[in-house]
Image 1 (spheres, rainbow, N blue to C red):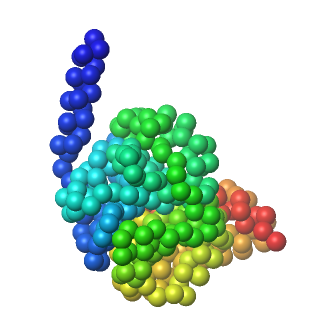
Image 2 (tube, rainbow, N blue to C red):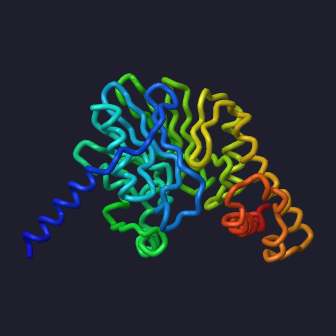
Image 3 (cartoon, one colour):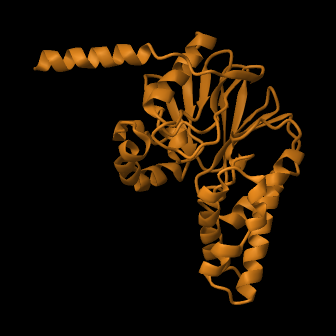
Length: 304
């Protein structure tokens, strides 16, 4: 029996290494991105719905988000090997959501450091039981606690990582999309990897603070970047103009909810009426908008 289990393990490992490399595009010199389609995470796409990728330095590679399934993590690892023989030294998880962390185990190896927001480990620990219990049912994937790897390096404000003549500046943001958002700035190419701090085409999803998210986006919109990489949607080459659809949606939602609160309207009323005119601008509106209203209403109800 033991020999049979060992044999099955070897076969599974060999099969994982045989997976094809994830398709990536070199969006800027040494910056490789896999763009995903806009889908509700389900058993057909296995939760592989986010933009993920990696950055190559002279000495080593930093992976930015590992994917929405263990298999996608393996495919991303294969993509790195296809592009360069340099070792992977960092895996940067930009926040806690499954489409960004479920591939972590594929990169767990000697010399690889996992990096995240200082609140990421707590968020992982809090959400892991729910995530693990639903992965098979909702996404048709097998996820164990080994797939949810907390950061070895925790970013409290900013942190610089040197990949060899390539410095990445990581910033831990206040509560916005979540309470554990991390962005990555590549100085060599003036590329800002915003991950889910920026949504385009796919409706923004609030899991943190609408006020905090607006504040962060407005602050970032005061700067100019050659390239901005969102967590969902096309790459942005006209920043800060490219931030405006996302900002406009949050501003409209916050403005309408504040007006309803002043009128004494209920949460139920807001869910049925707030922000509906934005529907034509966003994919997956029906799936996420009402939840956005609920979260924003609860926050704005208590603002001074």
